[in-house]
Every structure is written in structure tokens, then in C-alpha cells.
Length: 379
Image (cartoon, rainbow, N blue to C red):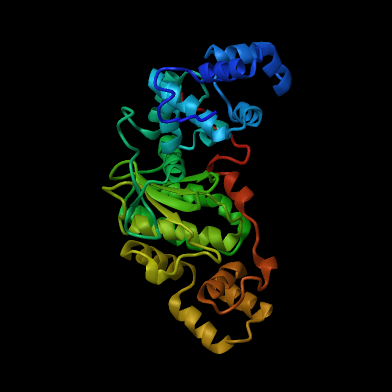
């Protein structure tokens, strides 16, 4: 049998050609069913066009009639296209939702309620992202890695959650004086890990709302800064690295954005890979990010103090010397260690016992979404 898949399926289902082959061989449908090991009803449905040819069936037909499986798949596709089978609108709309948001993740986290009705699911996803209609795109956010906008659905979803729950945090009216006072008080909390529980209150009294939101898979977010209005700044942290030096560095980096009024009249500003061995080099960052980095460093360990310590100590950074220096400047030893690691003065595995975990301390007093802390679902 010689088939031309470009012409034979103009008006006829593939079943017509199966029927011709059976007649040419003198076989009945029951014979083909026996050969292929399938129920007679399936063969009947194939011949009558009531059942599509799957890859498995195409392979069986190819073995029976000495053709290729691709030929039968081509016949099936050409016939269905000829019929003009309508595109499944529900699938198309659901695909759109999965393009603009990590739908399964935000349902799993309880950020929206699930629904099998596409109209309802669309409405909930759009409301969560602040989209009025399906033709509108989510707001872009600015990444620390570059000065260009990004459209990462995971990052947009995380920031959208932060923007949605931030009004629930009570805070004083922001002012330059109140924020400066908060920064002075934060400095007194850097030596003792347990004092981190006071951070949300100190920031709130300084006019800044603090949120802790567990990261989404593949989000790579460390923190974010945005303003609800001209006097209501917000800091959101993911705490994906549970160690005291990273906490303080990220927190003060975001404080730097607030101090410099970054994102005041713009979209939320998020920070990716601020810390760790994948941290983005300072030279590759935008001016806003460089300034926030320098702000954080200076409010952790004064540059002059750190330079003097390095000059006196390099290259023999013993644990005791680090602890003595940290005690003198009244910060936790891990903060000094983190600065040394960031500068490349010591390896990342140096004195890891100093890297105290603080996430549970922070989440005991901060508005938290994640790690078992369940906030209300978006309607």
C-alpha cells in the first residue's frame, strides 16, 4: 500500500484506509482486533472515525500493514485539521494563567483558592496579581542583577503576595527622623541573636513595615522594597538563607533602599542573590544597588574599623580574633565573618559554627507567611 499523507486525508478519516486494507486482505474487523490484541469495539470506532489514532495505535497499525507509525499520525492530524476541530478554549486560557503565574504554587501556599472553573480561576489569579483583564500583563519588577525590567512569574507572584498582606502590619507614619532613630536602635540589636525578635517593632515605630514570606521554588529572592504610599515603606524578606549575618545584611540593604527613597514612585524593587557564593558582584549592579550595598556594609561594620582589622590580622583570621573584634564593635561574630567572606578574605566554610540560625526568632514576632504560618487566602 502506497499512501500520500498530503492528499489522502482531504475529506476522509484514517478509518477509511484501514477499511480498504482489510478488504484488500480479505480480513474482517474481528481479525484486525485479534492481531492487534484490542477489543473489537476499538477497531470499529477507529474505522468509523469515533476514536483518534494514538501513538500506540499508530505503531500497531504500522506493524500490521508494513507502514510507518508517522504515516498514521499524519493521516489523523490532517483529518482533524480538515474537520476544523475547535481549539479547547479552557486549555488555552489555563495555559495563559500558567504563563503569568506559578498557579499550582500559589494555590498550594493558600494565596488563592483553587477552582476547576476556568472563569473563577482566572478571576482569582488576576485579582491576586492586580490584573484587571486577561489582556493586561503583571507589573514588572526591577532585579538587583541588572537595571532592566524582568517578567519572572515566580518573582512577580512573591512580590504580589507581599503587597497584598503589607497593609495588615501596623506602623507609625514614616519620617526621616523616625527612620534614623530606628537605624540607631537596630545597631544595638546586632550582638545578640535573641534580640532579633525586637526588629519588627523597632522598624514599625520607625514607620517601616516588615514582612517575612517563604520563597517560592526558583524565585531566588532575598528581599524586596516597595511603598504603599509616600509615607508607608515596606521591607519583605524571604529568609531563604537562615543565618544571622545574611539576615542583617539583607535587612540593612533594604533599609538602604528606603533611606535613598528607591522605588518610592516606581514598581517594587526586588533583590536576587544578595548573599552567598552566588552573590552578584558589586561591579555588575546598578547604582541603586551599589548604594544599598554600601549602606548595609557601613551600618554593620564601619569601613574604617573593618579595614584596620584586616590590615592587622590578614591572613591569620583565627576564631578568637574574629570574636574579640566583634565584641569590641558590639556585633555578632558571624557578621564580621560574613563581611570577611564577602570580601574573599576567608573561605565560605570558615568558622561555620558562628552562623547562628535566626529565622524562628524573627518569625515569632514578624508577620510571616510560610513555614506553617498560614495567612488568609485571597478571595
